[in-house]
Image 1 (cartoon, rainbow, N blue to C red):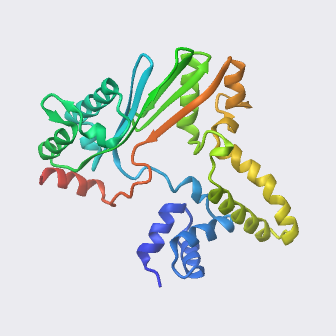
Image 2: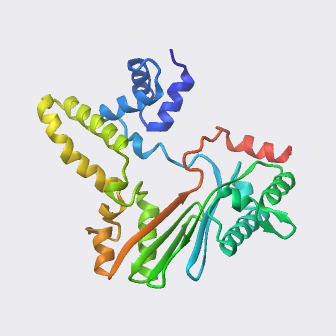
Image 3: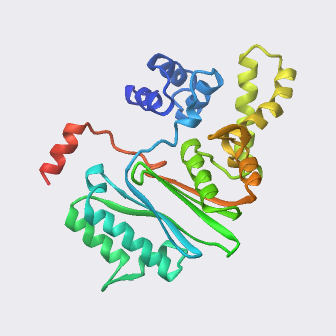
Length: 290
């Protein structure tokens, strides 16, 4: 029905104990997604906050030029390569090429020329030279108006990068928004961006949690709306308590500084990518033997 590896995988996803993970898989007949929900419903884990942790290596970068900006992520297999000067040069070169040509799709970006090679060819050559898989994963090209400002923040040398666009205000406030987003990991900017299927899923989880707390079904149903509002405050940037002053929301902080948040883009390296489990010694040996 399920293996020890499944128990270990569920534990890594949720942070719950091994015994609880085993019980969850038993209760759900080995279904991993249902087991995650089972643990959440029992209040055993905070799985939703752990599922998108970093699972790959690499770097992200932000480049700004006047009213144009680009944020991009390039992945590598190990952090050794992420520190490689050739790898860093590739990221900056790609970012500048995108910025200079104002492209918005990955297909167009890969066909841009850097010197005599396209970015696609440059990437192939870099992989051959370094001897490790490298992936140009994603980017966003962003423009702003003259009455708007960019904010940028990079954390841990490019492990997390956040780019914001504010109407009015100033770059310092825009950077504060980026720092907040880096720390608090909002999934959405505002309520109407949350997909209905996500909300319905949360409603079911909340209802089950309330029932497991001993609440009658009709009371549990009434509790859903209140807890959904709390959910919005956890996942929507505008409604989150501002890290520098929890007495106000991010939206209130920006508004008090004559600004409106138009856009926030947050890249966390390796987010959502499965990473093979290797110990440090094995990783070093793999590098030596290449």
